[in-house]
Image 1 (cartoon, rainbow, N blue to C red):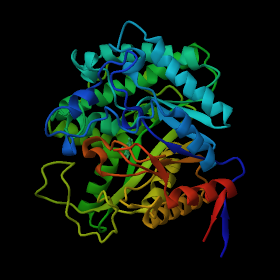
Image 2: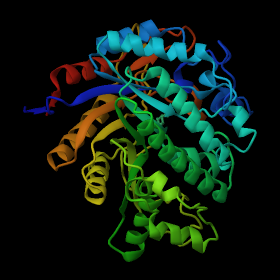
Image 3: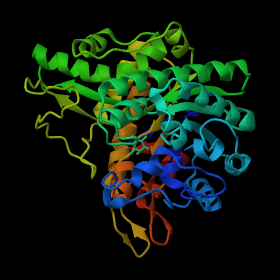
Length: 448
Ligand code: FCB
């Protein structure tokens, strides 16, 4: 056995998001978000589940901070619910909403845990959606004002800030594929949303600098790795296009100030355009301090002449093992995406803001044996170490998720947590993976 050690300043953490864990959907002045509307629309979320109660973290902050502390992690990534802070999206601020987050931040700091704050993890105030949501450029300014409100309140306490979580999901998944709120199916609308959220990101970074907020700001795109099934030029081109649409579309504007030409051409050939206004690309590419990277999966891509669309799934009989979400287990893809990013964009500091797996495991008298999650994490953390050794500027890693929670369109059917949550009693039970991760965090490495 050898011990694989991480650098002394490497940080371990876990991640969650407001709508997935908080509950308290109508308390203390919180107004509905697009996820309240979507989850209450019949047929949108499995079993009609909603985030009304979720893990009830709104009322159980003490429990959850204690569990984090006992886990031995030094970072906790959470998100702010915009409709708690500015319930109508623009206009009046709800100070009680901010109090809740300040209390959470204070408790984390008192326990030696660094707060890693996401400003937008998908819960757009419904009032803004009623005026066109992210398709409407007015939402950009509403977001910057909301961000500024949070900056002012938590300046000096929070030192790690993320603007957006997973722009591909906010745009394509939610407005073209239609699987997430607001559930549209319109590719042009999705591209408009993609562009507007990137401008919102850039303007927020600009505001952060103008206000002289202490700390670092970045954002968290989701990545996946598409490997060509063969060296046939059709497969190579298709894999590049899928990587382009998924990864580059959201990285190149921010890090290079341009959209990737090959993807832009593909969209243009189908009649879709990016509506760039003068100055947009300069704003989008304002320098950030670090990148947050979410990685779960990837695949082999085979050209399918019958597929009319970039996002049609291709049956490639890849032979990958899968998690209980049916996602390919592909740690090599993690390594590939990180090394590709470094060669393409340079060695910007990177935090892995999400990585993890869905596995069901029964709670048997207070014991939850999720050996498959441990194996998944083990493989991905080794891939991460290899990436570090290859020169990727990695600073930390956060498991998705601290606890089982509301998994969007799949409701409570897809557990990702290190902690089991009984959604009837809301009781939390650490799983085997929680104790395993504790050892990893404490020893800053793992055995192979
Ligand atoms: C990511 C989301 C996160 C969670 C995981 C499983 O796409 O950012 O909220 O749902 O997937």
